[in-house]
Image (cartoon, rainbow, N blue to C red):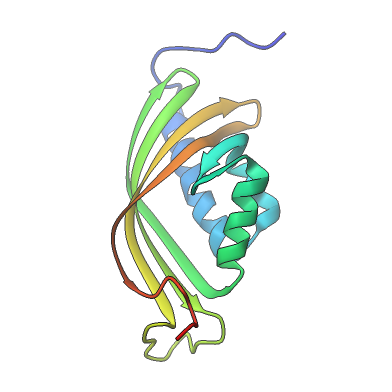
Length: 151
């Protein structure tokens, strides 16, 4: 028998756990720790135009494995918890350097993609803790080239 979904305000620690999850997602992307994607997303998640953990992971690997160093900086998190669900809106700046580009040189397009945006995450409390069920990414600005390393 599955537990009855909880409604109401946050439990102590919910906000910190959700922020930690959002930061863990950035860490997983930047360290390319694809075996940890299930720590971030639910099995039936929808994110980056893909449905399901396997498709989200494959899409993320397809893009980020082709990059050199990346850094996803996430902040200004605004969180609303309603029982076992939550919504988090946060700013993201994601820098991607092309594989083989000098990380300490003066990168020029197409050697980098720098992205400013906003994540809107719908989260679900699971038996393993909070997980992202839906991630929407709204672009605000970008510079460089999405097609890293291509002329």
